[in-house]
Image 1 (cartoon, helix red, strand yellow):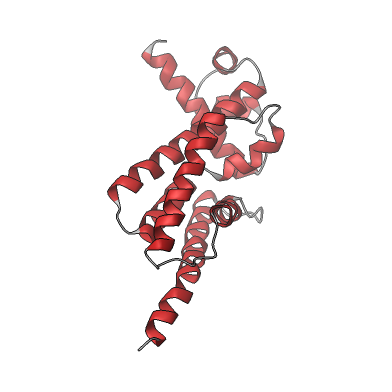
Image 2 (tube, rainbow, N blue to C red):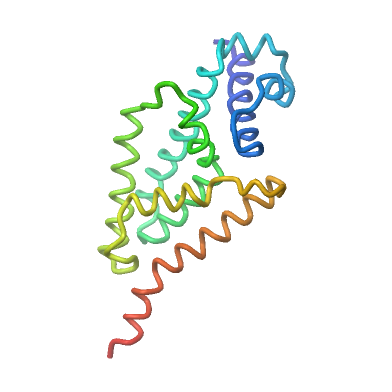
Length: 190
């Protein structure tokens, strides 16, 4: 594929993710093409039907988020810091679009990404728990579903920037609360 075609394809995916998060649902194809600055024919050449576009957008967000987390596992030794950075990166990558699009997809299954994501979360949560900085009764599912809640648009008319700012703020409150019990115990022990 030519460089300009690849650029257009990626732009369409990025815009689809933006619009999904803005409208809280499936965006219109003409709105995607318009915002991406391409003709509707370009959109159809890359994504002949809505399912192919939604699948590409969902997979892109998942791949980008998992890859960011895998890099953090290697680069950040503190388990809670790695988890916090991962969750904030996932928000910025548009992870909320996955939750919105999942029920719209005919076949939402990416076994390769599921394995990578499960391994990543098990590693991150396990390391933080072993380091004693995260509640030991917390599961990977708790983190995934917590992030899912923070990543969804509030649908109250906030701008995208306000939505993202609040999501990051609330995510920090959540993570601080998951760590607070361990910190209080340490402070109370002689």
